[in-house]
Length: 374
Ligand code: TRP
Image (cartoon, rainbow, N blue to C red; front, side, top):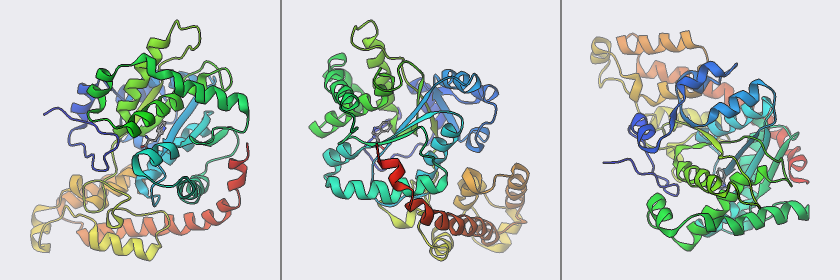
């Protein structure tokens, strides 16, 4: 069975990331590591597993040349640890010189999830923006925009909406069906809007020619593929001249019960606004364990960290020290470390993070306006 990717499904679970690389021609990220001076923890640990043309971004970072980081968000519900992975990537790139574009996909959410623009705006600001700021996003060189109102500068706004209107003549219905399967008018509208989101930073009204990198979950790769093809086909066109955008992909952080961390199931995620107490209870009650059924059996045969959600959360973000992580892994596998003790490690890290983050959120709320005035 080929892997299939539906960017609108909330259920995507990838069983085999290597297979995904091969099938969709995504490049292995490992080869990229030596090109990056200070790779992120997730890059070093192989959690960031694939990319398209990240070379161009790596050399822009190295030579301190202009480049853009652009990503988008569907403002749906609570901001959780899965969203934090993308936020960390945004901030990492901003700190390394990226002009930072963050797109609130409110038109997409309106057309595919039928929510009101007012409610979407509120969620985008109170959940996403406030958390981004508390995690370290800076207003300098940051363009946080809504698909429904690109800019108060009419030249910029016109350039963006004109591009949305014009990208469709570089693809066909057959190609779109091959990429996306079943389509609806709402999806088609969202696709062209997203193509323009990704390409528009290179317009002369914005940054002009430079590499654009899009950090996203691999569920968004179909959009990247189509956008890269459209960009290539536009070459030589008098009106537009784009380089195919670059991207990189991380594995999904597992949800508490295994499976996907999903906004639609509160017991699958830890939200950044969950109280430390609530988070602790969720970990104790729901975090899937790779341990054995009895202490005796666990001591004798050891646990499996690869399927253990608490261990994975430490690996994805909460235990930055490689040697400590390795000790946890070894002790868990030998049976020296019990599931309850492993959960306790995670709970301590989570408590410290949530407590300090929630304080930062309070001051972040006061900075929101700096990101919204344009
Ligand atoms: N479709 C994306 C999502 O579901 C949101 C999005 C809109 C996006 N425009 C974008 C993502 C541009 C990356 C780049 O989350």
